[in-house]
Image (cartoon, rainbow, N blue to C red; front, side, top):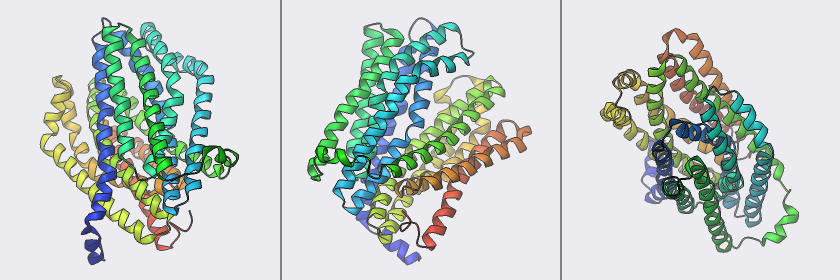
Length: 449
């Protein structure tokens, strides 16, 4: 077994395949927190704090909504990668068409019901009237990006599924850089304030959509996919599988959002300095996720292709190659936090009490990359295999473990929160690893798809 492992790891083409898929997505992910920093800096230089509070409130509502609908990207990646592995042009084309139809239907529903939804959510907020006013202003403009934002999820997933990571990289970078430039122009130059920040995001999403459609057209012609008009009568063929997969991943995302929301709100209940320290450390956890997501995306594309080709050998190579580089990335992040964790905290905040609190809980973050890498990689495996039900069930178990552990150790305060978070990330990986091992041993992982 060890000899086989070493033989697979000695193949340069495998490492090239993994890195060609992973590195572009890691690079594009870097622009996501950069956009957040520029947003905060631009709005934060306006005269009153309620402008920044309004943007924060409105953008959080939009971000959570779009994040929950991110199943469109994951489902599309897995289905497209499998069609690519099967070398089935019509099926690959249908995945794109059906994904776009689902995305536009969801965007239409969101636009139709966004007003009463916003009224209900803002009524639950304890924010000041000024913050609510500008939050509603931002939200009411930003919702019009929904058709483009959800369509971009499908385009990203479809391009990744065709084993193309460079086009998605340029798509994400274009959206975020355009957003940053328009932020500066609309807010600082034209003085549109909160409305300017909202319109910057809307126009950035549509600029990304135009670029994404160009990439899709190029891939369509290169792979000689069927004429779009011939696919319209087949649009509902097999769409049930896509809808079931989307619903399973949506429920999984709800569980994940419940855990992270509880982490924030429960930290706030422990005091201002604790919630601020947790925010600093959670920003580092996001850094871990941005790094590991690149390898998860590579895993999705490679595993999906292997599953479509029904090749256990190809699947094994994908698992070993991607896991190797995922481990390298997680070790580097662990070393980074061990050697420079305290300095990184001081880069983000200069408040002594918050620095002291963050230092107390920093050891939990130091072990997070090694613990959490497995859940990212295994997510990629199951997304590529389009096994949404397994992902949903394992996430539900991990969430229940998180809450059970926290409430049984609540007297430990914030340490209980971080212990529960580490165990949650670990259980996500353990649950999927058990399911994968059983299905691999019984030869049902590929055959049952």
